[in-house]
Length: 245
Length: 291
Image (cartoon, rainbow over all chains, first blue to last red; front, side, top):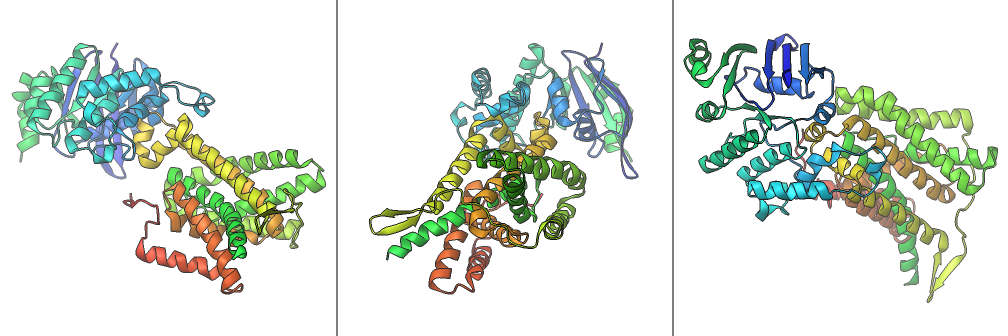
């Protein structure tokens, strides 16, 4: 069974069709690339999967269960986490607090929320992540005061914090310098080898081609191709979508 | 010189009540982008409810107080959130703001029409026995008001800083979309915030009722001053609302004593205008980008 299955998903904004009848599946342990020109519906697809937007038609299945109608917090609790194209952080919290925040809803009843936060386990995880991502030196800085690259790393760390089963990354390399890209690629491969499943939207073709074993291409809201990097590279429809007339 | 100290306590006493209502403003704005123009009536209604429990049902004071807080939390917290906020918030900030203006009039004139247009007496909670410190005489009621407000606000701060619920509130205030993707049920959190606000205004009601008497229209003044206080201190900072509330209370009290009692309400406005001109985000506020 696929871990995540998207069936005939459509999303309309008034009369504009942002996604139409897109189907794709993500297998456990996969590292799937999602590419396509600007405005092809990649982020809309992420938004529909994570409950940020409600799809107009179609279904999203996670481990065989229909999660189409769940709100964003419900999707999180099933084990799907994501990053945003534009970095999203809690600006007035420190790096560590941001990470803890990303895991705090993972457990606990309404009543336990009223008690003092017990987070030794989360704190260990956050400290490990900070170390792993090379953010130890700034762990007590406010997120708003980090450099762009550091914020991008923190964003990535927050997606990992709840120990999700699928991680959706929306342009993790955008605007990041080459050294940091290398580091991020290594992290993603590393985590993938440990069993984390990723879906990555990325414009840097070199990165996508080397990182992913399977790639899905969207154009104008429709899936136009799917295959290995080599197949995508040689697919005339893909070239056409990017450079076509 | 002694009256300076007496007025200081009097100003802090009324100011701490404004501060509680102003903190409620901030909480609602932070988590749900609601500006509640019925905040004054959110103070008046619990005062009436308290009178109901005390005089009609003959509850002892403590029981009446607890019952008032519960009724207020359900009515002005849960019900308002379910009936108004949940439906209107989707359409943006403005429809909800206008709805709260309507709600304030509904509460105010219903109390006038169906209950009484007269001022109801309210028993003193604390002894009015004056306290002497050196040559200065303080009203113990005022001192107790300040202490009660300090305890309530301190507890609230602890809740926000130390509990998971408080952290979720901070998260929603700082980044709503991210908070919901990180598993926070924003809608439920908004409900909890409305209930917290209603509890705050219920406490404010019980503290202010012995001072002002219970009348259907006192909410206009209280709501406005709490609103000034929130703007003066900074609409996105609880400590700002606290500072703003105390400042409005002090300015009002001192100017009534030393300048003009008739124009006492005008001086808080002067400060408000000054702050808006010189530091529009408020004394302790943080500039926000309009999202």
